[in-house]
Amino acid sequence: MKVLTKAETKKLLDKNIFEVPLNPNLVHQVATSQMANKRQVIASTKTRAEVSGGGRKPWRQKGTGRARHGSIRSPLWVGGGVTFGPTNKRNFKKDIPKKMRRKALFMVLSEKAKNETLAIVGSIELKEIKTKEFKKMIDSLKLDGSALIVLESLNENIIKSARNIQGIKTIQAKDLNCLDILNHKYLVITQKGVEKIKETFLN
Image 1 (cartoon, rainbow, N blue to C red):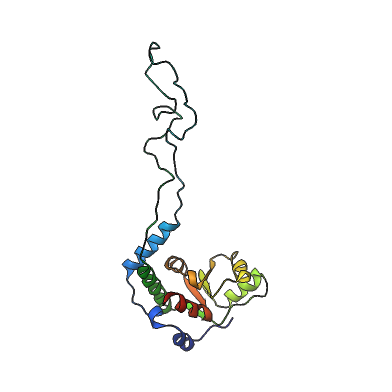
Image 2: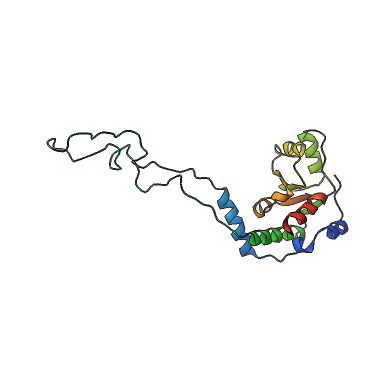
């Protein structure tokens, strides 16, 4: 895996993508929306309509000396429904305009280039699924932290070889996003991956 020199990298990188001034507020807004869109509704409670049982009146209306009740699934009863509890119908999705998402993406890519935590490699090739071989390739880059590997297209040999290596994640260039870049210290992009980024996000 050959790493391009600074001169070769500078020549390859488009200034409209890799030299965009940072706007922290915009990046924060986009990253927050992407986190919200990934959020799953886990906590939820059942209302009296969803709790099982309670089909008949627990005792007659008058004559027992007890308080009036129509169902054992009333929120007043232990085991009854919950009033105003969290439901699984909540929606955390936040819509951000495409232009804003792209602008934020270009900003974080520019920061990686500016801080020299971006590496452009000629190509990454594996004839078969081999975690050990892929780890050797990554180790040759001498990275002291997590890395996001950007591929020009779907490559199962690389994706499956990388998934068991801690701190390493692979992604296709067309799926590149602000949040994944921010979650990794280093960004490694193949030469064709850079071309794919231009093709996808500058059109």
